Amino acid sequence: MPELPEVETIVRGLRPWLEGRRIKRVECLCPRMARGDLARIEGRRIQNFRRHGKFILADCEGVFLAIHLGMTGKLLLEGDPGRYTRVVFTLEGGVLLFDDVRTLGRVEVAARLPARIARLGPEPLAIGPEEFIERLGGRRGRVKPLLLNQTFLRGIGNIYADEALFRAGIHPRTAAARLSRARARRLHAAIREVLEEAIAAGGSSISDYVDATGKLGEFQFQHRVYGREEEACPRCGAAIRRIVLAQRSAHFCPRCQR
DNA sequence: ATCTATTCCTGGCTGC
DNA sequence: TGCAGCCAGGAATAGA
Image (cartoon, rainbow, N blue to C red; front, side):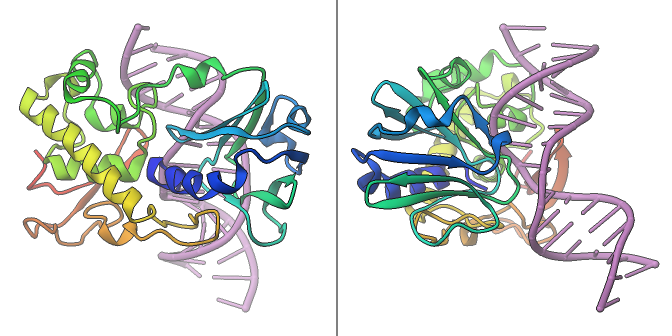
């Protein structure tokens, strides 16, 4: 499941090859996944290929391209189109495939950056501790669902929310606005830390994440709570618990996270 | 303005 | 061995 570190890994892998290259043809094999007229980027060069939260964005000489990988989306420079290929980008000198088993991904072409993407919260790796604490204070909900809310911070998904809360020693059900300054500061640092470590490891390969060359990430071996229900907490040895919070599973240590 | 619940989607797993 | 039923969780959307 591609979250910020996985999308960052993909973008870094693709950028050197994609940037400045002209798109000759776009074939969408799953119209449900397209927004806008994808053919509008044909004949244009890819510029400013970048990550924005979990979105992949590019300017294409006056037309805008946004890609979201959903749960199982992959952008591949190698291999042939297969059963799960949803969009084929034919570029000068090669082909970029958007494969997605579950079709929860999206490819959007628009005149400019769509407002709902522009409105997302700040980058977790760019926000400072003071601004983070201030943003937390104005929220009424619980901290875990808030971390998943892309208008609060952009790019954090279930894995890194659980891992950051564990590192900060905060229970996922804690009311966000009730966190002390010290704990909020610790959470800010934990988010940075876990995302940076995950990017360094090439992301987490849970289910079927791979980078643009088909390579698996390594960070799943460093997960301390995510997907480790019943296992011993690496800090205190207590059994990791899994609960459902806001329709999502939340993994935590009942002793370390209060 | 914010937050919560529902929907989409299919491979892989569990249990009978 | 086969199959029903459930689970995973991104964002969009509707409703509170």
